[in-house]
Image 1 (spheres, protein in one colour):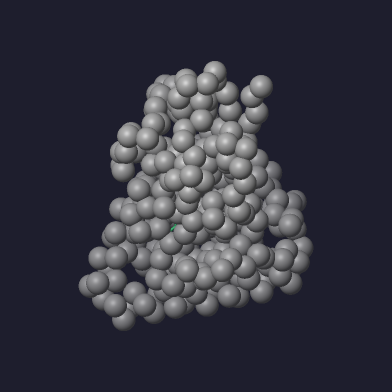
Image 2: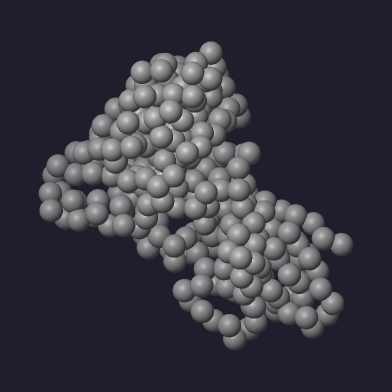
Amino acid sequence: MGSTVSAPSKIILLGEHAVVYGQPSLAVPLVALRAYADIVPLPDHSGLRITAVDLGSQAFVVNTSSADANQPLITAAQLLLNELGSSPPSANILLHSDIPVASGMGSGAAVTTALLRALVVLLGKSLSDVRLNELVYEVEKIYHGTPSGVDNTVIVFEQPIYFVRDKPIERLNIGKPFTLLVADTGIGASTKLAVADVRTLYNENKVLTTNLFDAIGSLVKVGRTAIETGDHVSLGKAMNENHKLLQQLTVSSALLDKLVTVAQDAGALGAKLSGGGRGGNMVALVPLERVVTVKSQLINAGAVRVYQTTVSK
Ligand code: PMV
C-alpha cells in the first residue's frame, strides 16, 4: 500500500545574500506549492529505486556501493540510510514537484526533504526535524556550494522563520496575516553563480560590501518587528529598501526591477527580488483589495506566473 509525503516551497522575505555573511534573514513557506514523494513498496530484495518523474522519469538505483557524491538524490538517500543504520528498503520512490526549478523557491531542498521523509516512513523509523534539516543541508551543499541554510530550514520546519546562520531557528509570530504575490520572471538563474559574484564583490571591496550587508541586516530586524506587530506598512518599506541594496550587490535584473516598480505602482506596500536574484522571483506585499490589480499588472509586465499566498501562522 503506497502513501505520499511532501515538503513546501519557500520565499525569502528579507535578507538574502547578506545571510551568507552572518546577517539575519526572514523566510516563509509557500504551502500550496510543494514537492512530493510517492512511496511504492516493492517485494523483498527488489532494491531501492528513486524515480524523478519531472526528469522524464529518470531512475536512480541506490545500493550500498552506489556512492556518487555528485548525484544529490543518491547522496541524500545514502546519508539517511547511514544515519538510521539501515540498508536500502525495497521500494520505488516517485519524486515530483510543482515548484519551478532555479527560481529561488527552494525546489532542490523541498525535493530532498520529501525524499528523506519517504525513506523514514519506509524504514518505519523516526527522525527529528532538527536532524532532518542537517541532512538536507548537507545535500544543499551539492546544489549550492556554500548555502547559508535558510532554504532547508524554512522548508523542513514549514514555518515562518528568523534565520541566522549556525544559530538555532527562531519561529516568527505573525501579528496580523499578510498576503504575498510571488511573480516568476520565467528566467532560471544560478544561485551558486550569484553568490559567487557577491563573494567577488566582497573580496574587492570589503568595506562597501560589509556596509550593504549591515544595512540589510538592520532591515531584517525592522521587518521582524513589523511582522510581529502587524505593521505591514513598515514591512513593505523594509522590502523596498532591501531591493535597492540587492541592486547594489548586482543581483537584480532589468525584469526584476521592472516587476518591482510595477507592483509598487499598482498598490503593493513593498516589493523586492527574492532568493539568489538575476532571474527567479519577485515578492510583493499586497493589501487584499489590491491583489487582483497587482497580479494582472505583473502579468502584463512580463511575469510568466504569479502565485498568491497568505501568511497567517
Ligand atoms: O535558493 P535561493 O535562490 O532562494 O537563494 C538562497 C538565498 C541566498 O541568500 C542567495 C543564498 C543562501 O545560501 O542563503
